[in-house]
Structure formats: C-alpha cells, structure tokens
Image 1 (cartoon, rainbow, N blue to C red):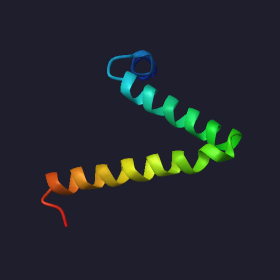
Image 2 (cartoon, rainbow, N blue to C red):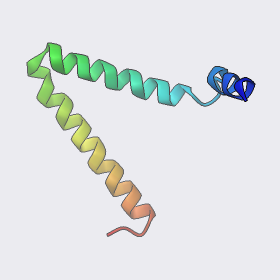
Image 3 (cartoon, rainbow, N blue to C red):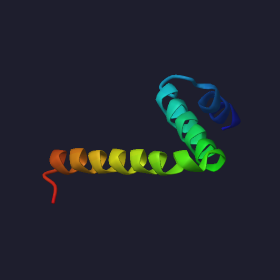
Image 4 (spheres, helix red, strand yellow):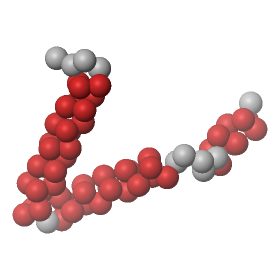
Length: 64
C-alpha cells in the first residue's frame, strides 16, 4: 500500500496544468495582499473567468 502511495506522489504525468493553476492562484493572492490597487483587477479577472466557465459548461450540458 505504501508503495502505491509513493508511486502516486512521485508520478509527474499530467500534473503540470494543476501545478501552473496553483502557482497562478498563489501569485494572485500574494499580489492582492501586497498591492491593494491590483486587488480589484485580480478579482474581476477571476469573476470573468468563472462566468466564462459557467457559460461553457452550461452550453455543453444543455444548460439553464
């Protein structure tokens, strides 16, 4: 069982997109905390991204 967990943790295949997303999120949070003027722009970017994802998933699933 420990060998399987170790293999899973060391497997790097397919992890790059998740790692980039987490890195982007970390940088955005740090920038929002360090630069109050940038905070609103970052929040708007995430809001717009969320809306676009909602539109895409709604359209793909026959949405509401």
